[in-house]
Image 1: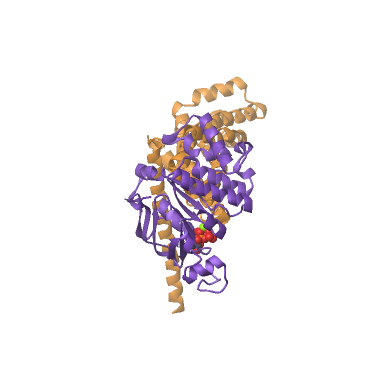
Image 2 (image 1 turned 45 degrees about the horizontal axis):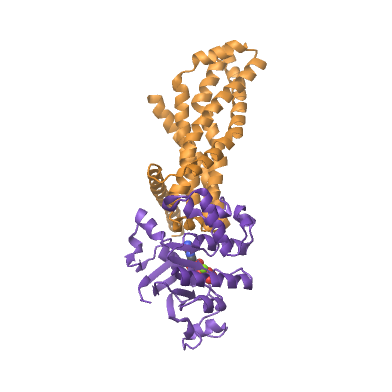
Length: 264
Length: 256
Ligand SMILES: Nc1ncnc2c1ncn2[C@@H]1O[C@H](COP(=O)(O)OP(=O)(O)OP(=O)(O)O)[C@@H](O)[C@H]1O
Ligand SMILES: [Mg+2]
């Protein structure tokens, strides 16, 4: 009897978790639908949009740049080791270029921005929820989805491809520095190989991914902040959930997008 | 003065989980009158105001403003309805990413009532003066102000667009007695001169006497008593008697 009730309890807890997940997914879908529909409906708040663009895009530049620089440098060394096993050290520039543009530029850049931006959006909007600022916005005849969520969504979706593009360039530059300074490549040849090898699609597919990641980052920050629990604890939990869910969704959607772009 | 009902609540009920906060609130506020809601801490006074504003949706009952059922309003219609309102939140609820004057003039910086920035600023400074704040405070951030100053900025924001209906949630808590009196006078002035309809929540009996035309006492989720302010001392109602005289003994339990 005791075992039976134990099993029952175990199954019930799994069931509850699954139900909770479905409920959260439904909730999120409704929230995302409502906010996205406000993107195209006036009024728009250009000042807010610009403010968020600076905050999400411009102030993430150092983080994304440094990440890309060191990743590119390490990547050059690793690929050199791999390439030398079948006497193909000369693949370094091309593999670095494809790895940075198609995968690491957008994904690592987005992860760094997820840590920085999702957290701060969730904390800010969560605090606004807890201190009744969101209620105050409503009573001032301002739709909080339009005023708070839409500018962040749009800004992140535009800023991330730009950051990823810069990340691509800086990452390739990091690999170039290592390649030329440490691995004995000729400067002109390195650049020539990279340039000849890269296709337009390599770069654009990475930028498309980055745009989706930007949307995910802002959406997770806004969603968790907007539905934050009460008190400082609620805001803390919202912040953690925003970063974790943004990161996981970035990885998951990265695979799905890569699969789609692979087939295309 | 002709009596027209501005805000009518009928049987409004609201529970949070198993906690039944409102159990059927009936209240009628006349146009151009100042009604004060009194009641113990945690009895649902703030929740009542938020129900009228649609920030909390009641589980049962109806709320009408100017004869219009507010619970059904969505989108633009709701915004138009909210244009009539000004609200001072209990905690101030100032936008901390905006300057003090941008908070006060928020309605005039966007939307249908948009003014040129310079005019909006002048208007904000004028409203700040009315709540006893100097023009220098206009260019500070809310976080740089004291609690009482934040409260007054919230008040300035609530009255900035000269709304028809104003809700004040504890306008004088956290203020010194002199400033509290200034604010009481201001609320009275807004009702008398601008003809606004006001609903105020307060625990301060001297405020009640100063600003109320009518008083409603909320306890146990219902309005226990409602009547003209002059009757609060004479009424037989045990709840009002206990509250007005601040007695520990009576039907209102000390532990809630
Ligand atoms: N969003 C909410 N979620 C859950 N419970 C809530 C919520 N808002 C209010 N409550 C509960 O409703 C009750 C009434 O709250 P309310 O803020 O209306 O009290 P009040 O009468 O304004 O008290 P005070 O004079 O202390 O401000 C409280 O017990 C509170 O815990
Ligand atoms: Mg309250």
